[in-house]
Length: 71
Image 1 (cartoon, rainbow, N blue to C red):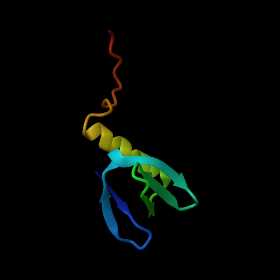
Image 2 (cartoon, helix red, strand yellow):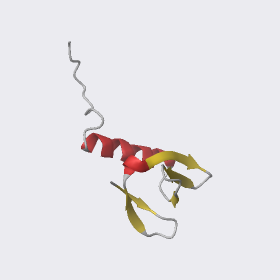
Image 3 (cartoon, one colour):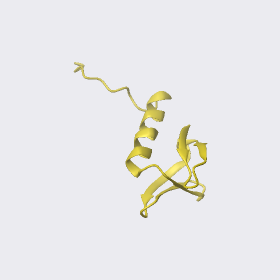
Image 4 (cartoon, rainbow, N blue to C red):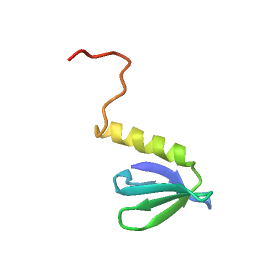
């Protein structure tokens, strides 16, 4: 889940698994797989960072590593 802010200042939590698309119109608009849309204060890049952190937290993406691992 990621925390976001609506244009009116209200905070809400969104399950990032259902995000299909993020666009800037110039406001950041998030479209879910259900077709529902949310317009938020956060930038497109900030939302993408929150999603990436969420995926790492639930281990859908590997943790970043500065070490080179030999196979």
